[in-house]
Image (cartoon, rainbow, N blue to C red; front, side, top):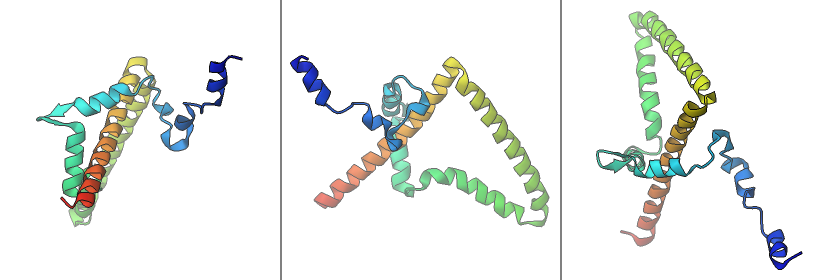
Length: 151
């Protein structure tokens, strides 16, 4: 045994952290997650990166700002269904929405298994996840700096 092998045998496993439950992103089946991180950092919309837009939305509207895009239409539909005419129309609309969501889900599941389409879908999921994570880290860091410095 050489000195290098002896040193390497005592080093921790570099893949052990990824094997932990919270850090395991192998389900994405991405060989390298670097494209998603770079795209999340550099994709711009009106001069702001995607992470900037997510951070501004969370800073302006609170930690549940992203869920508002889902909950507001659901609440409006629920209120609409309470009206006498809206009950029947609401049930029909819910049926249409359910069928559309089911069809989109089947299409995404089928595309997830296709070689190149699946990679792009996984990349989009990774971009969205990294954008939210980067935005939360930036906001937490900015909040911590303001708290510590009082500025």
